[in-house]
Length: 417
Ligand SMILES: [Zn+2]
Image 1 (cartoon, helix red, strand yellow):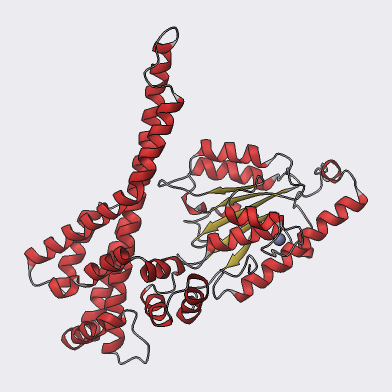
Image 2 (tube, rainbow, N blue to C red; image 1 turned 90 degrees about the vertical axis):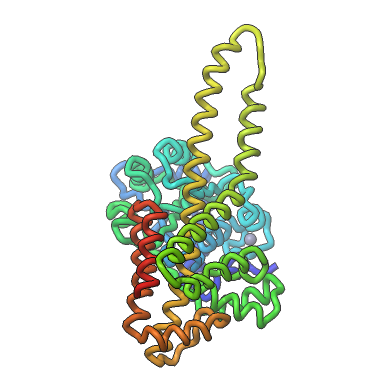
């Protein structure tokens, strides 16, 4: 098995830094074991000493932020680093039990928070911080990975900040966020963390990993890597999932269909409904399983003493579950719609580069001819205006404009130019 960093595509600098830090962390544990046995008690923070965890000069610290564009591998990097911290060799060998269980998601001392809804709440964060403070059962580190740190509520952010400011001696926090902009991560949290910036991986590197790891044919891998615009997970889906390819084709057919006002509104409806259907399919199974599990746990249909009170409590829990599921569905819809908008932006970007005769490869090789025709008709200026209309739609949805309204405005702008 290749080592734990093998899937981190095109991020040589980051991998180098993480390897160094993991080996430094391992050295900290060895020193602890030799000089201060039992290490975990002796390593407790001393009053008045800056609780910065292991000495930063060794390359290790207790709080990290992985930043980069979507698909660049923020959570892949965080998980690989977590594995390297739990690795018995301190390298992330990919073969020892520490590496294996972390990569498989079953290590007892590694917690992954993946926000399913629109935000991570304070309750979830407090519970997490509390558990993260316990002694690592494997004798190495407690690692907490927060993969959508930009989705922390303010209260959750404060709970996390407290934990980062006074970290338990063996706890490491790994946050993932698009950037260190204050909109994504609070300035105070940022100031306590080391930042590992990831870049958009070049499409040749993405294609290479699809071939090597997923056994995709080289020509398909190259097409998918270009079409996914550096998003590794998206490239893999396009290469392997016919449904994902069909959805993409439907989106890329939009520019040709915009022949009038009516057609623009139809295209908007189609795009919204496709995103809804895709989202529903992606969460339906989890919804049903969760509900069944909760009903089972609550002993649905119970009678006798206490049953009435139990039912009242059960109603509250079911309501809570429904609220969580609704938030997750909204998130999934927005993600699906955003993917469609990125594909569409790629099309108009192709038209723009062609109008400018820029010597760059098109994003969507399969619609390059249509983009070329658009470039002739619209020229650079018209292509740019259309590209901007797509980007403005993304920004509007991010700012909570109702998706249908934003998409309709975009379609009209794409039609009129
Ligand atoms: Zn290992």
